[in-house]
Image (cartoon, rainbow, N blue to C red; front, side, top):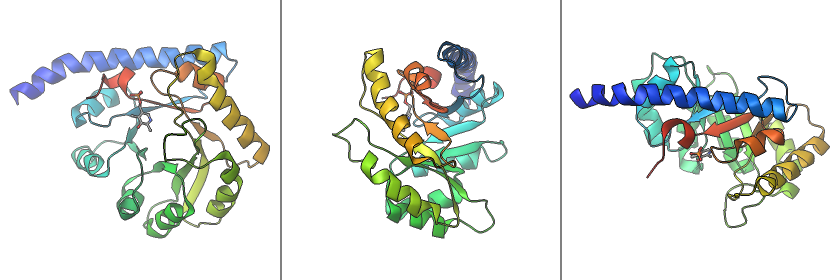
Length: 236
Ligand SMILES: *Cc1c(COP(=O)(O)O)cnc(C)c1O
């Protein structure tokens, strides 16, 4: 208990300041790149961090949290049952985990196959609203196995639109890290222009941008930046 309160005492003000700083970065980027005010939402990525960190961000007004690992997320959800949190699953999805994910999350960002989408839809409990889905697109990171190609996007979107218990909201991407601002923007620009060509009015969520490239992401049309390190500190 002693340790717990010591941690709270030091971590809480830090998370509060970090959150204010990130919000300022988002609002400034919206202005700089002629985006509508408040058109970019912040998803707080709390993977590997304790529930007490989530409480600190919550007390500063944050409501949307993203987790990557199913069991870790369930533990925190149990601990934080009394809080009005919207939970996003942003990790790689194994097919043997779809049932738990479908029952315990409001959003899933990394859908990259029809098989996974089908399972999430059929396993979504009836008493819950449709599960919000983003399709993960692999735009630049050839090394990574996750995400579909831009060529596959049209078909997968049409297929997913037929599933009764899913609500297709948009696309998600994790490009290969780049330092140069223009290099950071390029894959996002490619993705957004490809999505706009589909003229599918349900695709309004652009889930991209992390601690190191949120300005580039906002410049290219992100509506949801997923921030971990800048908010909660580094991870091992
Ligand atoms: C960890 C993670 C983030 C947060 O990344 P930071 O660089 O720590 O801000 C965002 N999106 C996904 C999918 C992640 O796994």
